Image (tube, rainbow, N blue to C red; front, top):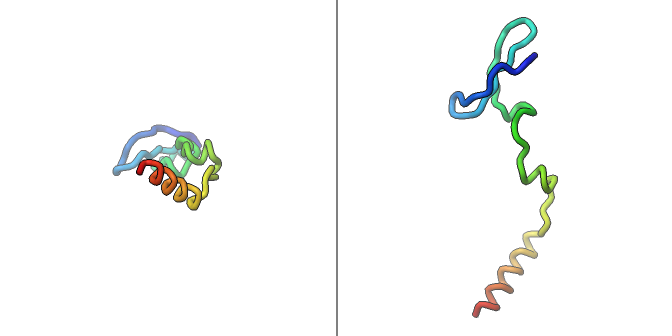
Length: 67
């Protein structure tokens, strides 16, 4: 199977694939490995550097120093 074309169709980015028997199918690019990796997942591996509790505490501390 080979990728024939990559373009926007029906409001989303899709690729058209040609199968060995000559048939073609259009699929969302997100179903393939041709899509660009999500930067958050690529850099952080899905991990967050901070816990939400710590960030909320930081907001309170910064707010207290501005007063």
